[in-house]
Length: 165
Image (tube, rainbow, N blue to C red; front, top):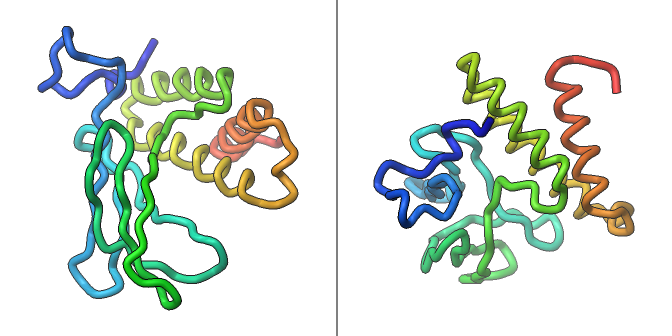
């Protein structure tokens, strides 16, 4: 079973639905230094996020432009760099792991059935965040992405339910 939150936004019809939900990325920049991104699925807040640049320099996201599909131009500034831009994708799909993605979908459907949609979406975001963190460490570059995606999902789910790994 697939959670209803993977179904299309009501503005999309069956003839133009591409099989994905409507995700909305918002930039909060109401105050100086408050450039953070928030991701929503339909009307549910999933996660606040940012971008990673080389080094530990703090960056402020200043603008989002030219969003097409799941790609967008992110403009940012930092202490050593001004007015930089990158084109990127923000996805909550565990593309590197077929088994991990299907396991997440099953858990989401089960949690949604008992009214825990917020927990389901945050669990998915935690899996993506952990995979991103581990894959960007120098020691993990040699690891196979698909097998490691399965381990990330396993780790997050065992931690969620407080079970031993």
